[in-house]
Length: 213
Image (cartoon, rainbow, N blue to C red; front, side, top):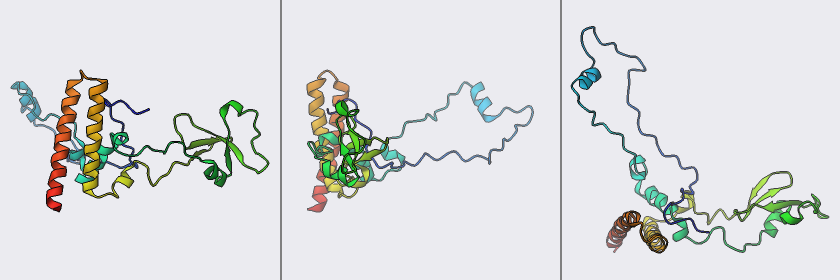
């Protein structure tokens, strides 16, 4: 089941760390005292009724130190199911891969009836519901057999060139916007936001095409 077009999923990145915003430089934690009879700058500002204009803003991915290519990858991963092949591939037979791990697949309905090890010494394991390709053995060990080379991850996306990433982002935004208009036609604010993102992505893609020409 694909996620709702309203709430994009979190990027399925490989624990990519985003730099924290720089902290204000202090005096090594020391506090400077204010001479008696003289108000501190903050106290004086409050006494005059001035409001601070230093409002904290939630930084976008582009403002958090991500370079343009990583920024493209992040935005693709938010809606990867609209622009990348299904992952893991449907109807994959994991029998041989399990055997390579000395495991065999057992249905949960017959779990208690099956011996822990069969005649070939293969330990029983069941596939986790909702996570095709991920198994849990009788010993409680998790085994992930999903293909890593096609995983929608930051690592794999960064192997692609910028032009391909821009094309994928346009494809993802177009499909997400189309799905939103079908499932939530009255959500005009999000439709407007996605339309603006799509226009920006198409403009960037067109600029890259002209430079490559």
